[in-house]
Length: 535
Ligand SMILES: [Zn+2]
Image 1 (tube, rainbow, N blue to C red):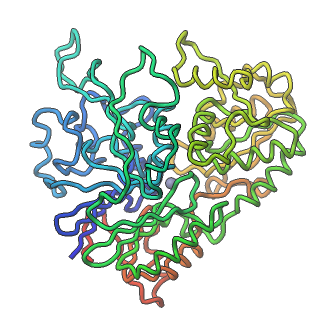
Image 2: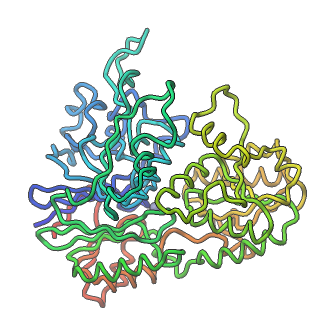
Image 3: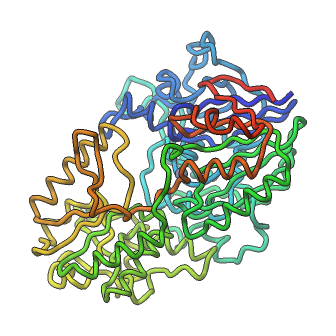
């Protein structure tokens, strides 16, 4: 009997954490950050206390109370006594690994808190993007997926309250990543060096990294298969694990309407050949009948940008390299340059290590927008990127004085640059991302509209508030291709794989599968939060 326990991803989009137990072997399918629960309690200025270690996420039910699973340096004295009475409390024996589906934090984020002895299985691209995101992003204790700074429990200087304090002398520790889609020994030297050291020589200001070289996935005691799939981030994969009850297949997040749709098709065909016992399938967009494709978006956005006489701001997730390349093509087609941020240039440089055909910031149509900072010491990675591509750096004044020559890759959080740029009449804000999912995002959208009105920018593809909720006006449709397959595509995948049992995750409409698959012989079992399904 194999047990599947759902510690996240139930009635929520993201936060996936599924424990697979087969005899003495245990694997997690993703270990994601639970945005839905987190936002119930926290916001930008109210966060879990890093100094309290595991206490805050455990006390608020954001992390399952599984003793033995987490980093011991984050366990404050007496921590577990407080949680042993909880119904979900368990002392968990050794875990053989986490099968990580992709580098979005709602799938990877809480790996930060796992015991460092637990290996992470991922594609090479997922490992590299996770590192790039951490190198160039926030360093909060619950976002340290690839490496972390060990803490010790002590009184900070001049303080009476003891806390988990980062040890200034300790090296950062890198997690063990095991690669599912290639043999790490075939990686070229530059790629290996990026993983173990970084792009540039360490400087005295930088903390040492106790590196953990990439290894292959064959070390796993259970038989694994890794299937690349198409999603809104490169490197996404589905996984299958062979158990005593048969193969258990896990989709991660996927779609059939992106540039790499063929990968998802191949996954469905090959997973079907395993005749799986169970398929754990995402259902983010089950209620949608169709999705705009990346190609439709390309055509629609090109037309709108060609008609625009001023500055164009394109708002999309630059972590989605396929989307960035779509806008790079549009920039070439409309005689503009695509201005990306230093963190986007860092990501492209990383992706190029594994996919040399992806252009980096040297590309003639790419430039790097350098924003205004207030510190004499901007982050080292940022300085290094701007020095390396020195001739490609543009400033607000360059963009402001030649507005019809640029497409600026900005998001909502970069709008504070507009007072330096001063968009001219006829400028366009093209929104190519998802609609607001929660109240906080709705408030951000109201602010976004205020910025556009103030600077006289025309918004296109932007959801507006109506009596029926937030909706994209007719003339702005087809400017975003979702990362998730629509209902008919998901049903097609389920029918093609034809598992004995289908368990929906990463959805608020799990019942959809039970309603739609009645005639297929596939038994749909709906998971419950923290509940176990035996197969
Ligand atoms: Zn995702």
